[in-house]
Length: 418
Ligand code: HAM
Image (cartoon, rainbow, N blue to C red; front, side):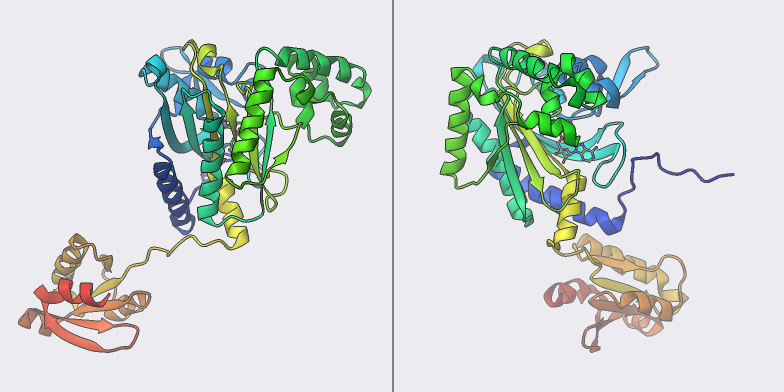
């Protein structure tokens, strides 16, 4: 029978990689805590409507990338393609933002999008996501952007570019949208097929089409800044001033519109120069109308998500440190089969005392055990003599020296010498 492989666009994160992921998540978690964000764990599947209404019917995500199925009760369920809509749903459902209260929450986990897999783009990928809910002020945008930058700073990422834009609000965007439709309609012959379908449905998306010809047309498209209402203009100026106050450099990109429809005012991305075409390591922005789109009244929000898979890829490429690889410190070896039981007892005792230790459970010879012990700092050896005297021989594997000590002193001895 043919072997079964993982579905296309999914990957197994094996021990050689998973400890690096743990480092990234731990660093993100500490940074989130320093910024006052609390962790939440939310469902991986939600009602499909949450995303069609929240992320937007005309987005690529909702139109063609969602993993949607009917469950056994006949309800339409979707594996979450992103975290923000679920976070807002949870905030509404659990009354986190009633009477002007605010909530700063983060989460991490798998997201699912049926995209064409390539380097840095998977169908099951992982995001670290932070959302600040209930605050309309531009200072919250600045805090969120600063948080994402700080995570990357602590991870040691270099060669990053912060790109920001304002995509307006429900008051000024319709005017801009119409200007774009008028402009792009007069350049139909230069647009790719996808953009022709976007023309009426979602003309803003034409602005960030990767096609060269579309790009040339988009370069001369009407400028969003000329269409922003005074509130959006002011908000954007405050975000920029805030970023400058904190000493951040950023690039303005009027063509940054993002692939999700819930954004209002601020949109931003953090790009890496070391990733090829899938170069965004993080993206986010403000979404003041998401709550009402999913039936939750008025709760402003701003947040970001960073792609864990991509961050790990860039760190690897840039030779960033992932901290120390977890290693076994002590190997407990049995010299002869009669001491195997005593070996397991001592190993368990060491482990109870937080000493990373390992022993053989498969019946390997003493020679093979000592070969494996080679990567550890100490080997504890128990043979017939040690059993008779209630001792253990502790060998320092870096200098070859060896001592014989009472077995009940092994924990203290190793703690002092590790
Ligand atoms: P997004 O730009 O769609 O935004 O995704 C955020 C990040 O997730 C991207 O910058 C990228 O690093 C990673 N990512 C996205 N798709 C893939 C994929 N197929 N494979 C690997 N990595 C991927 C959002 O999802 C918004 N919810 C972000 C947000 C939070 N906005 C406000 N709050």
